[in-house]
Length: 427
View 1 (cartoon, rainbow, N blue to C red):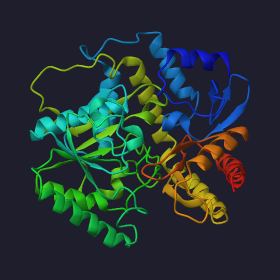
View 2 (view 1 turned 30 degrees about the vertical axis):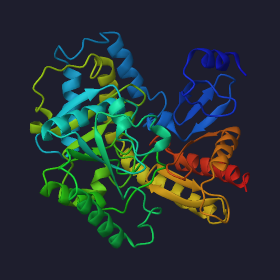
View 3 (view 1 turned 60 degrees about the vertical axis):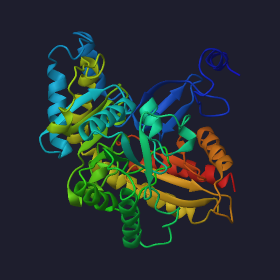
């Protein structure tokens, strides 16, 4: 055990998870690579949990942060902040939500917490619809709507949560149906559920479930849900903490794969927009955002240094078409991994889109989750010079692959080769 690991265990909570049997300390990074305290170099396919969205030490972002730090770091939302206004204007336009207002937070958890506050206040209801296998953050209210037992340490909650089918396409009671029948059955289940309860405040859903193992429904499910919800005045919250900013390649926001009935009422974001700086936020129609009848501010949300980073990062992403790169390079990477998976009984499915890819592992010859294999692959990949993540929900185990959106074809091939060797090592 390293000295730093021993000190970590002595002073930090037992439930603060670390990867690897011998945890590593990452000291610096550049582009798509990071280095640990022992000098080992790794290709980073997880980006600090989908947070280093463009690149490590991206010059445009580091320059913006450095220059802003030399002027002023922080004043709070009690004062006008030009950079916060500029970033809010751009995000409001990109959201496609009409008459949008933006509120900045420090994390995705806080963004979802704010969205729940807005929805329940606007609708005068404490009932929330959430998806099974979902994850929405670490706060008391966000844990209360998380449909993933591994990440929900308490059943106590200020909200009454009702869980809906549909977030996982290839498991559950509707898995055997084709896409159209799957959507129809999920809509019928939602409609039946709503007939038994008082009208909820909102449905919150991740277009692609992150912690749950990068699972998703067929395109169009949430549009069909939206139709049912709109008829009853129920709001739709799209949790874009992991799917936003073009990561899925096909769309800038994950909800756009379900956009036939228009944009969500509320959108939450975080992670990648700051490229490592602590930014989250909520976008909502003005009537929803302005429904609070008490004072509210944010001490750290929208602070000058994080807004400078977010504005520089978003500018870089748009000017360099990183959404297009995620589509092109991600498509190649998915096909490469599917070709490998076809030869390996331990792999049940390779799924995802763009640079948000999940590999579900099972015990060979069964449909049972294989968490030991997931841990072993994570270790083998690290030994080979590749960092990846893992996740999963009820009776599943999956590898999570989400590199920075500047990933090159050569780096995708290198990472796929390392991952292939790691997967073959657990056969």
